[in-house]
Image (cartoon, rainbow, N blue to C red; front, top):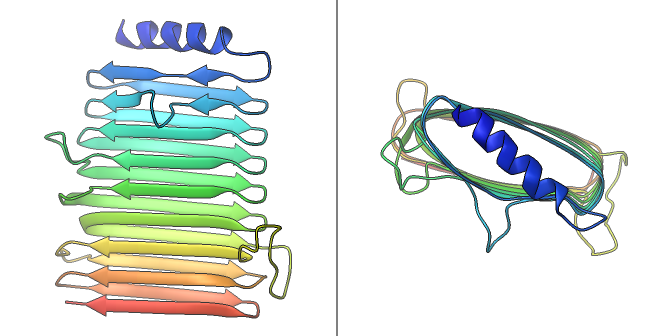
Length: 238
């Protein structure tokens, strides 16, 4: 019954949006949620900086598929266990995700897969925030130019994999003078036996890579770049 109520709420909010956009605002509480959202078009939104898309509860699945350009997601997830698959096709899309430490679960176990095809997309996500999550597995696959990923994962075992494919073989800039691709990632907290791992594979175009890992136990960076004009900074501390 819980899922039916949420689905009905989403349908109503999406159907009353403006002609060229669908807007979804969610405030949900309860465990074992299975939520799937599909949006096709331009200027679609799931939450905003001033309107909620807040998911509360343990053992949840939250999947998103957006097709089109200038779509936006601003979402907060609060709970112990979260699994999600997010798929994007289009340009100039933005994602801002917090897996919040303000709940008792502190996003203990997170598995998130994000795949995007398009240019000038920006992703910002913060998992665990100021508290330690136990296990986070995040996989990004991007195909396109001028995509930006900024991540912070605070946890005991954090595994981040990013595969970026840029169409150009040498340095390129967008109309806003952005790099071909840009990655900024921070992993903090005392690791367990697995520790913190970042596996980055980048093909084509110039760009920037900034990696910060801190905390006792293993910190591992596995970086492969095939392309010119990159600026790479890596900091590891115990």
